[in-house]
Amino acid sequence: MTDTAELRRIFAAQQANRWRVARTAAAERIAKLERLARAIAARREEIAAAAHADFRKPPTEVELTEVHAVLAEIRHACRHLRRWMRPQRVRTPLLLFGTASEIRYEPRGVVLILAPWNYAFSLIMEPLVAAIAAGNCAVLKPSGKTPHTSALLNRFIGELFDEAEVAVVEGDADVGQALLDLPFDHIFYTGSTHVGHTVMAAAARHLSSVTLELGGKSPTIVDETADIRAAAERVVWGKYVNAGQTCVAPDYVLVHASRAAEFLSEAKRALAALYGGSDAARATTPDYCRLVDEGAFSRLKDVLDRTVAGGALIEAGGQSDAAERYLAPTILSGVTFDAPVMAEEIFGPILPVLTYTDLDDALARMRPLGKPLALYLFSRRRAAVEHVLANTTAGGTAVNITLFHYANPNLPFG
Image (cartoon, rainbow, N blue to C red):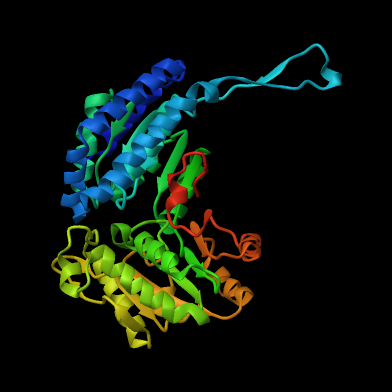
């Protein structure tokens, strides 16, 4: 736990150092990023071990979603950084003949990065890559729910950077709040909408700029023309990576009533292929992680029980073990929009399958659930794709695939 005086000391050191860091050239920043990449590559087994210790995250998932994601971000930044830093000349109107104008991009200064627990390494390191590339100092606050990864980050960053440039601060929500009381130049927060309100209110007191990456109930629409087998495989994979604890995971599926039975059959087949064909196999596979803490388990078990009591059917899964924080990958049918599982973002391994007959009616039922971070559509009809794009809003929309838009560094996220 870091006390308030220590936080202020670190912040003051970075404020005193920010102009030196801001003056660094592209070559210096690229060298820092390349050193960071080499260190990550050398410690990938240690990163995987920490994630497994926190909630039994499979090593292959850690490699794909944590290590590879950050290394790809670093490569992208190194490739483009010189162009990003170059001043941009702009045209001069006739009235100002004889003058010249250009845009120069400046570092923010001292940046606070508040990271979540679900991708505890990549979702703190990727914003750090941006902060370093842009010539900032940064204070990193990992989640207290993943103590092994948090401790690793503290050691790892401490070996690479002076704390006057990059520092890791460990602790609980009180430490996070104490950090928000400091006048950071920019705050980067990934997490829940509820905490997002707190972050934005704190930023407003200091007129700090913010980047908020929040969640939401990300819908998946499967229309009557879709390749059902491909749709089911991609939805099941996207849903159960990290046991559904992914901000852009498909939250629920709206499938055309004429294809619902086929979709459920293919989804169960895909589930068996990924995690095992029996309840026992899925409970013991090393390819499926656990829920992060007892609170997450209790919340999801409660919402599942109430949804089933309300008339939903368990098509697959449903088993649980509180001591293991294990909730089986679960598929539900017979779900309606007023079911308990539809009240808020699930953020866990429960996949409600709803049906529709009219696309516009389905879109109208989706809208009151709020703007999602992601929207997925499976269709082979271009007109339907354009209709959905024109009549919905989301942080990102992917057609005939799930999650992959996040992996494209050329796209903005959220």
